[in-house]
Amino acid sequence: MNQIPMTLRGAEKLREELHELKNVRRPRIIASIAEAREHGDLKENAEYHAAREEQGFCEGRIQEIEAKLSNAQVIDVTKMPKTGRVIFGATVTVLNTETDEEATYRIVGDDEADFKQNLISVNSPMARGLVGKEVDDVTIIKTPGGDVEYEILKVEYL
Image (cartoon, helix red, strand yellow):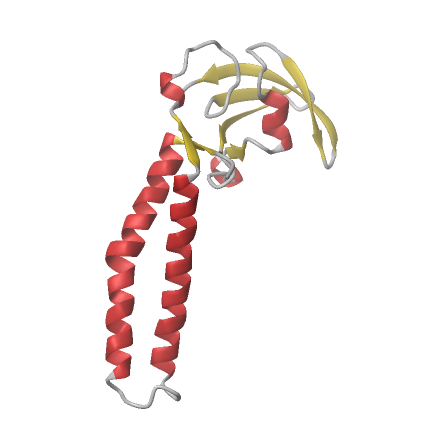
C-alpha cells in the first residue's frame, strides 16, 4: 500500500479520534444495544436498529482510521533542516501580486486539509505550485478563475 504523508499534528488528531471511538463511543453503543434488546421484539425495535446502525458507522470509522495510521508516513517538519524551501508541512505566507492580499497556508496531507483553517492539501494546485520554491520566488497558480501570480514572503517550519 502507498504511504500517505501526514503531519505530526494530523496523526495525533487521528489517534485522539480513534481513542474516543474505541474507549467512549463503542462502549456507549454496546450499552444502547443491550438496553434495546431488553425491550423485547427486535424486528420492530427502532432503538435497537438505530444503535446497530450507529455501531456500523463507528466500526467503519475505526477501521478507516486504523488503515490510515498504518499507512501514514508521519513527517515532523520541525525536525527538518531549515532550508527556506517550501516542503510538506511548511507554513507559507504568500502575496497575491495582483490584489496585494497576503495569505498564510500550511501544506498538509489530504485528510488534514481544511481550507477554512488555511490547511491546504499537498495535492492541491496551490500547494503543488508552491512546493520547492523559496522566499522571494514568484509562482503562477492555475485557478478556476484563471492564472494567479503569488510571491512567497515567508516559509516557516512550525
